[in-house]
Image (cartoon, rainbow, N blue to C red; front, side):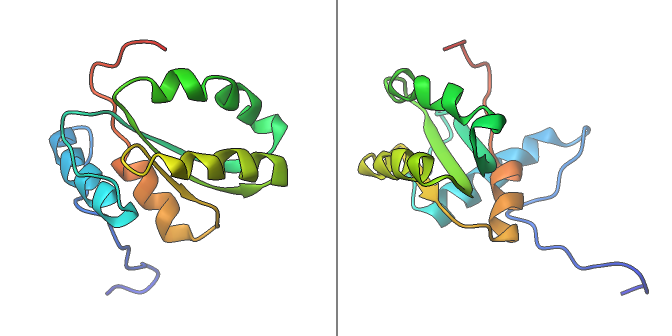
Length: 124
């Protein structure tokens, strides 16, 4: 390893603008690691943020029922205000649709960003 470089762990495969198809491997790796069914036919939404009103969490919380009425999966990696942590913790009642990780572990942030994938999504 060259001086000044860091090894980086990737969730499945690295990708760039010329190899976006490898995101499917990242998606499957993320689904598997967080305990969601590995499905290539469903959008996987990732939310990585602090759970505070300034980040728009109230907007997301307002559409959760509509979100989960669709065939989607949702991974939340966050920590913040208790009221929002409690709200999103209830999503764990849908283990085939939601994975809620209330912590701030850096490797989960990268995996959620790399694995989130929404092909040809319809608006909510």
